[in-house]
View 1 (cartoon, rainbow over the protein chains, first blue to last red):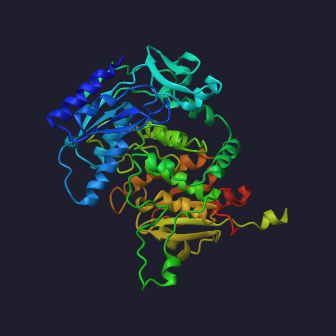
View 2: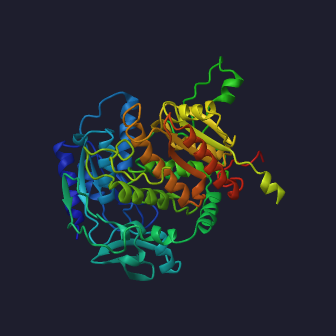
View 3: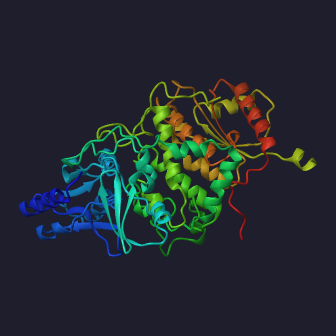
Length: 343
Length: 144
């Protein structure tokens, strides 16, 4: 059980001593139950920090933002940033460091173990509460306790927990400067890749029917890209913002430039976008499930990334976010990689 | 029925400059007959084939995509085809996962001395593609 007081004390202490610039954590949100990311810069604010089942955001995204801002301002950011990180978030941070996005000493990881419970899936919760709006969520042993207008409601965590948390293999931030909560690695509430395996049992055409239905709905809001800490490219393949258009640029040049993917939300383009994204995240995605949560039209984007993760694990023995100095998936190889599909 | 018989699949073949491209040359010089359905695109190395190329080829109307390069150990750049083997495995699995027929994507090793093998690879691929019909799943719709 994590005592929020410990996290607050740590944050207050570090800010007071001037060891860190900011503490990125969670605080009470402005729309009821869900937490929201908080950037704590002074010791007095430290009491705003919270830790509850709605802390599902992957905060490592803001480390990327910070990096981009300091690159833009062309100045060194100086002091490190402290960040509250769950198991999956800590692995994202490891991947970012593996890719030399920032250095280990630039970040101070306050690890929080998910223990037996993980975080909430609001979509699952909605089907349990019959329209009642909860105002507060709290951990209690293996249950979540929700405060609603009609009194307290207690639900077993595994009924409303996010799928990725049920399937999580390592609910503990291995890479950390400081960690709260017990290491419950090995607690396995569902088989890893359970949802994926179930989906894959269907035939080729059934899978296509389901996916084409999903791809049709994509409206290219790019929420999945915005929320993903791994989607940090300055120029995304879908929007060539850096194509220089000057007075000398002829119409032919504009027309001839390579557009891998059109911006219009057509099925073929949506497929190309989401598939490209899945390929770019292969071996980097740490299954934080944020793309799934952010998607306004419920496309199971996580399943594409999950598929890549499982292939990497089964075929190449690759585990994303395992070590800072390790090789990346597509820039390394083994002599005995499977090659029997090649004629 | 007759329409199906007349259907000729369009294959985009990414051939490595050092082996498969030379292999296709040898097939031509040796006057080996094989289907003319493949559009060859020479790339420096199979390791340079981004999965984007494959998605893009399907997106622009290819019925099948072939990636062909040097045998393992023969890469001009030492390890390019090792890297390709991983990437192509991933994209192949992903295409299959969303329900694209597995036969639409193929990878082969064809050396510069294997003109006959190149002809065989193309023949087999085209034969496998014909029953599948045109690829409509990833193809960009005509202007609306």
